[in-house]
Image (cartoon, rainbow, N blue to C red; front, side, top):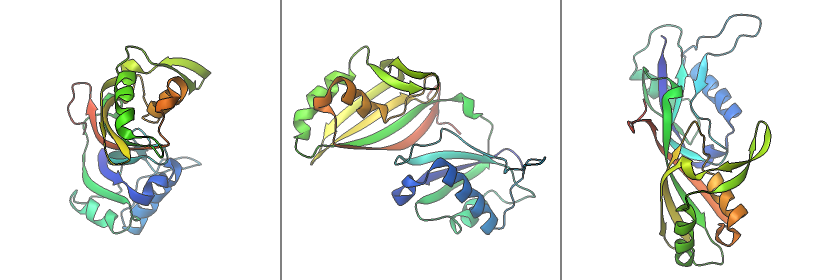
Length: 219
């Protein structure tokens, strides 16, 4: 079976699984579930699987995607059931289906996050955070393949809102997934570089949904 895609979540302790270990975990799960993956040919065969937008360690997701190919036929509804019995805690397959849209057409990420402040009042941080991310330009130092370069992340933020809670500030943001790519971890990094008085003591993020350029849920 070709052109198959999994939608799965990665939460709890599983957020600390690296991308390489996630690939190994998925391959072992297919093996334990009795669903042989197709492998490439040649001297160094590898499983024909690919992931959309690999997560940073520590980031959770409710909408991760993985493409794969199976040797033989299997009901799409059976695939999540069998895989979930073989996967570790924190990784859950939500759906299996035949894909029609390539990963290159992903454009926007819906992200939620938490900023924790140990000795500062979240309500006092709120106005500064809103003002900072309302700027027309937010130029930061960012590591790239060519070295450390100045990058303006403001154009990659389509929308962002903040709300103060008990000891935390929660945020909701719609950010660019590709061309340009904005890792949500760059949001607290921007504060650290340009407004350290607003930088949280701890930040965590969850990817909630993935969209194409027309804001349709990507499948």
